[in-house]
Image (cartoon, rainbow, N blue to C red; front, top):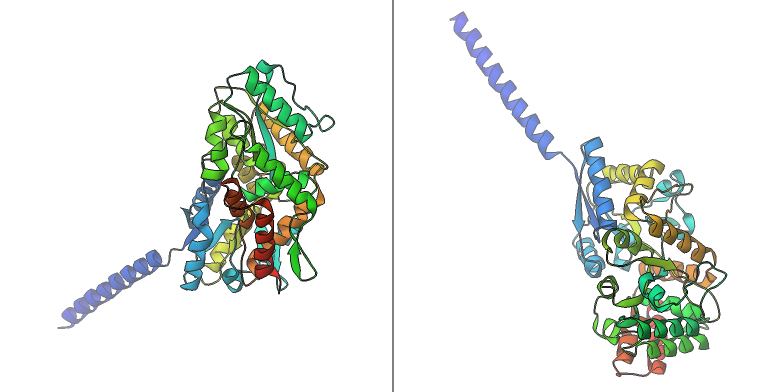
Length: 418
């Protein structure tokens, strides 16, 4: 009888231990954290973040689920998730929505501890709601083979930059003497168009006496841009109908491409049919590029806030950020970062040209970017891409340049004047 009691006790104890072990195993499995990281990806910038996320998982065991979201859908998708109370853990984004503001975590500690550029951060209510993850600039690429074949020289330093009329004249010569189909293409982007306007002396659109306005040079720049879209210098279909300018340039049939530094790594890898080069952009009254880039944001309410903060701090640690910037072709935002882009002669020269453009640029470029991005997050309404959308109407003959300017001024006033 005593032996039976002992045996029963052993069996019961074993069963309890087994059940506890199973329970702990299930709990351990279910407690494994996964961070959802929203990224608007491509084969270079998006791939760089995916590579670094994988590296973090290998080092820590914490899974980073990189979700590739189309750029045009990013703001809407995150807004819907925030409204539903189920935001992602973090995101790399260039656009914002005021609805996010209360859900964004303060990233002041990362900015200070990791020496992230404060002048590029977005501040709201005394907190750092977004820190830059990359820094970009608009620039000009040329098909050097076409220029050489036509016997047309291009700028080789900031001391011999084209005026816009000189540049257009050069493009006409290249298209006349070669088989180039068009002189140039420009991304269908307000950011790229604004760069041209700054070069004409535009101050952008700004608040004055309780409403938004602009200076006369803005109209001069827009008039010049319309003339460029003549299906000879520029194909009207890019801006008026959304054809892909990058593919057109890569085909070798376009002499120049008005785009930006984010193209360098892709061109270095994928353009094999001609020699390309970065050169200084033309100007009318002032030299200017336009600053851009994406931000890192962290959301409260994801359930993995502590784990997310650890990942962000790891990513911005100097050696990790240098690796990220090299993979993605980023101009760095961490002070003192030394980036090896792993590119050849054309790519190395390109980064030198972009840094020279940045150092020579009009102050309005930095000021406008900071104000515009902050307004997206802090205003009750948003007015994204109103200049681009209305210029498309102008190019399609639906409204005049004067009407476009008036509409943009009114849209900004309605959205941003409090």
